[in-house]
Image (spheres, rainbow over the protein chains, first blue to last red):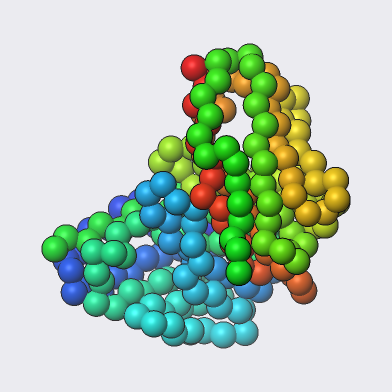
Length: 108
Length: 115
C-alpha cells in the first residue's frame, strides 16, 4: 500500500488567501519529508523539506509543519498567487513513494 | 547545473510493440528513480538504482518492464510488449542519495500513448 496520502484531492482558494495542504504518512521510521509542486506538463519540483527532528520549517511564502505524534504533514502557502496553481505531493525518504496529490486552484 | 534529461519527450506506439526511454541524471547523483504517472494520479515508483545496483524494484511489472543502469550513470527503461494501460508519463529523477534518500530532481518526463 501507499505510505503517504493526502486528505483532500482538490483545494480552491482566492488569490491572496493562505492555503493549507495536508498529508498523512504511515512509516514511523521516516526521517525526512519533502513537498513537491507539479505544474501541468512538467515533472515534480522540490518546494521545501523537513527532517524528523524539526516541527516546523519556513521558506519563502511556504511553511511545512510536521506532527510526528499523528504522522501528519502540512504545507502552508502564504498569500497564494495564480502561479501557485498546481498539484502538490508529499514524499518521505524511506521509499520515495508519492500519494495522489492535492490540486490547488487559485482564483483571481 | 544541468537538470535531468529524458528522451524522447513523446512516444506513440501500438499495443504489443516495444518502447525504450532514456534518462541522463544530474552529474554526480548516485541515485536514479523511474516513476510511472498515470493521468490524475501521483507518480508511482517503478525502480530505484543506487549507482548501478537495484535498491527497490518491487513495483516494477517484471514480465514486461525492464530497466538498466549499466555504468551507474544514464539509464534506460523498456516496455516489451506494451499494453494500453501503460499509457502514462514516465518520469526519471535523481538524487545524491547520501546519507539516505534526499530530495529528488525530476526530468520533464516521456509521455507514452499506447493505441
